[in-house]
Length: 101
Image (cartoon, rainbow, N blue to C red; front, top):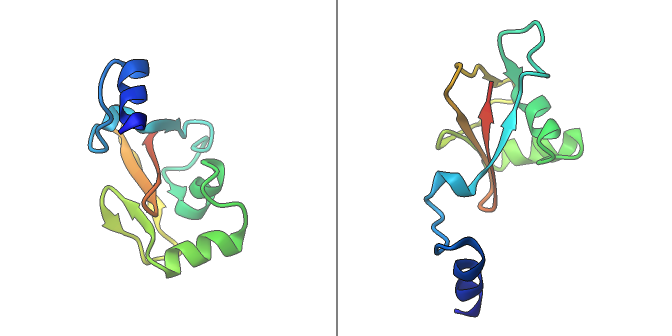
């Protein structure tokens, strides 16, 4: 309850986990120099969700990676963002970022 009061006092509104504006954003234009998509493990490392190859392999094996709400089970998954739209990438329950082109 105290944490909710502090959040409301600092941000001017209560915390709502379903509010997309609470999620950090990440722009992948620097990664997409000449390709049409980004390999998901590469993106996870650039967003600091995973530190090593073993981290992202375990995350995918444990089905803790979601892209736009869909659980990812493929180690070779490619993300192909569209201009002016974002892709929501989540790892577990606490890590989430909006990915823009």
